[in-house]
Image 1 (cartoon, one colour):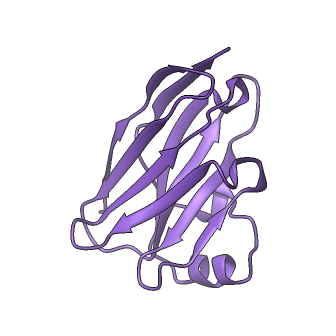
Image 2: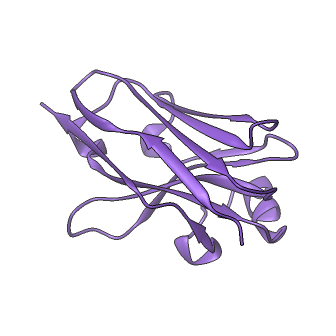
Length: 129
């Protein structure tokens, strides 16, 4: 069974930067991050397809967050710049082995948490104003 190990996160002031990383124990088709703020539903942030490097980045973080991949290390990175207080949440790395995730990304369909079956432990990101 594939496992994900996350690192990064922490606390930063508004306008600052943080980088998250997520390493998979085996090959997967898609990987990236969702986030969940207190009292809110889990939402997509950014996903990358490991074979083609296609990406999906949600509108609220476009231009501020960048997802990248080191395929040799099976590690994805989420560089978060110009952070805002509304980015405060627990960020969960997620991965999927079913190729349907690739189709979803190429069709620019927003990824849903129910479509991802491999999850990391989550890491807290707190942005203060």
